[in-house]
Amino acid sequence: MTPDAITRIHRSFEAQSMMATLGAEITEVAEGHVRITAPLLPGSLQQQGFGHAGLTFSIGDSAAGYAALTMLPLDCEVVTAEIKINLLAPAQGDLLIATGRVVKPGKRLCVVTSQVHAITNGDQKLIAVLQGTMVPVPLSGS
Amino acid sequence: MTPDAITRIHRSFEAQSMMATLGAEITEVAEGHVRITAPLLPGSLQQQGFGHAGLTFSIGDSAAGYAALTMLPLDCEVVTAEIKINLLAPAQGDLLIATGRVVKPGKRLCVVTSQVHAITNGDQKLIAVLQGTMVPVPLSGS
Amino acid sequence: MTPDAITRIHRSFEAQSMMATLGAEITEVAEGHVRITAPLLPGSLQQQGFGHAGLTFSIGDSAAGYAALTMLPLDCEVVTAEIKINLLAPAQGDLLIATGRVVKPGKRLCVVTSQVHAITNGDQKLIAVLQGTMVPVPLSGS
Amino acid sequence: MTPDAITRIHRSFEAQSMMATLGAEITEVAEGHVRITAPLLPGSLQQQGFGHAGLTFSIGDSAAGYAALTMLPLDCEVVTAEIKINLLAPAQGDLLIATGRVVKPGKRLCVVTSQVHAITNGDQKLIAVLQGTMVPVPLSGS
Image (cartoon, rainbow over all chains, first blue to last red; front, side, top):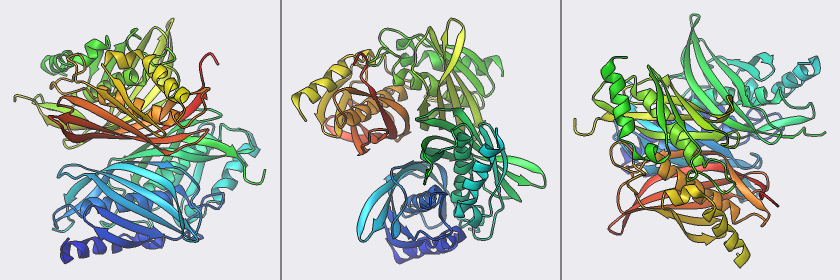
C-alpha cells in the first residue's frame, strides 16, 4: 500500500467518533487486512458485566470495512450493506482485537470477514466471527 | 406481563452500561415486543457524520434480546447467539427507534427480529432490519 | 403490474430447472410480493425424513428474488448476493409455501425477506424466515 | 475418528434423498472437516443456466452440518438452526466442492463455516462462503 492509502484509512478511522467513545485504536493496516483493538471500558458492558455485543460488533464491522477500503481507489469510502455476527464466548479479559479480511474484493460489492479475539494475560480466545458485504461509495466531499 | 416481569427487563437494561453510553432508553415493554430509542450523540458517529452501524446494531440487538426475555421465566437472562443486520439508509435525524419482536419463542433458542427507524421532524424511515437467535441462560447470581 | 411484467416472472421461473426438480410452482405474483409452493417430494428430504433445508432455502430464496424482480425494469434479472435463513421447525406436512417480500427496493441493492410455512390439513405453521440482498443485473441476452 | 464415527456420517448422508437428487457425494470426513462434491446436473440450474443458489446452499449447509457431527457423540444428529450464504461468483464449471469446518464445537450450539468452490479444468474458484449454527439433537430412534 502507498503511504497515501494508509493515511486515508487512519484519517477515516479518526473521523469515527464511535471508535473514540469505545477507546478503539487501529493497530494494523495492510492490503485486505486491518486490525482494530479496544479495551473493555466501564461504559461498554452488558448486564452481566461482559463486553456488550455492540462493542464486539462495532470493532468487527469497522475492521472488515477498512479491510475492504484498503483495496479500493482513494476517492472511495465504504458502507456496510449487511453483516452477520456469531458470538462464541463472553467478551472478557484485558483487550479485544478485531481482524478484518477481504474474502472477495469488488467495485460494486466486497465480501468481508472478521474475527474478534479476547486477550487475557497474553492468551487469546476467539469470541466472535462476522461475515458481511461492504459497498463502495464516493468519498464525501469528493 | 406481571409487574415483576416488567421490572426485571428495566433492571437488566439499566445494568447495561453500553446503553447509557449511547444515551439509549427503553420506552416500551410488552410480551414479545420491546422498543429502545437512542439519540445520535456526537460520540456515536461514523466517518461521514451519520450514526455508526454499531449504534444501530446495539439498540436493534438489545431490543430483540429483551423481546425474547419478556417470554422467558424470571430466573433467565438471554444472550445473543447470532444476529444479522441489513442497513437500508444512513442513520440520521433526531432519534433512532429500535423495535424488537419474537418470531419464535423457545426454551433452547428464540428467533427474533428487529426494525430500526430514524425519526426526523416526526417522520419515520426504516434504516435497518435485524434477524437473529437469542439463547436463554440462567440469571447471573441465581 | 403490467401483463408483460408478470409474464417475465413466469418465464424466468420456468427457466429454473431446479424449481422443476423440486416440483415447485409460482402461485402468486404481485408488486413486491411473490409466492412459491412445493411438495415434500421423496427426493427432497434430509436424514430424518423431513424436507431438506436446501428445499426450504431454494423456494424461500426464489420467492424473495422474484419479489425483488417485480419492482425492477423489464431488462433486468436479479441474483442473490447474500441471504440468511433461520429454521424454526421441521419441514413436514402436505406442502411448503414460501412468501417473498421486498423490504427496500433499489437499483443497486434490494433488501428482501421471505417466510416459509408448512401446510398440514389446511393448518399452516411458520418453519423458516429468510433475510437477504438481491442485486439487479442486465437480463442475459439483452 | 473411529470407524463407527465415520460410518455414522456416511449412513446419515446416504439417508438424505436430497443429496442423491443433486448427485452429491461425500468425499472427505475428518474431525471438524467434511467435503461434499456435486455436479451441475441439468436439473439443478437457475434461469441463466448456472447452478441454482439452492444447490450451492444445499451442499454447503450439509458439509457444515456433517463437520459439526464429526465432533459429537454417536447418539446425536445435528440440525441447522441458521445459516447465511454470501454468493461470490456464478456456479459454473465441471463440479462444485463444499468444504465444511467447525469454528466452535459445543453441546448446545456448534458454530460452523463452509466454503464452496467451482472446479473448471482443474482450476478452483471460490463461489460462496457460509456461516451458521448447528444444534445437536438426539438421533431419531435412539
